[in-house]
Length: 97
Image (cartoon, rainbow, N blue to C red; front, side):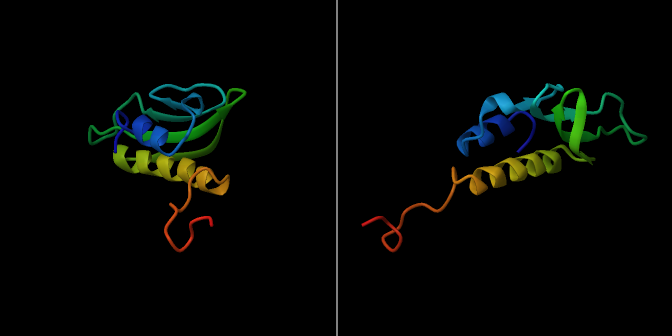
């Protein structure tokens, strides 16, 4: 998973596209952005945060794009589980009667 594919993954678990911004900061959205300046080794850092009223909340920084994407995916998927939008698929043992 990377910045190019994360939207597809989030859509698959029902995360509304309007609350995620990839590559740019956006108000009232979870943002995944790459640092503009490379570090000493020439790599780029990645930041994940919720932006609201010009402020960053629940900010996390990563040195690896895939780790940043998995972090954001995990956070948003967990939110879907908590609100009941994602869960166990029906099986013969737990299917409604």
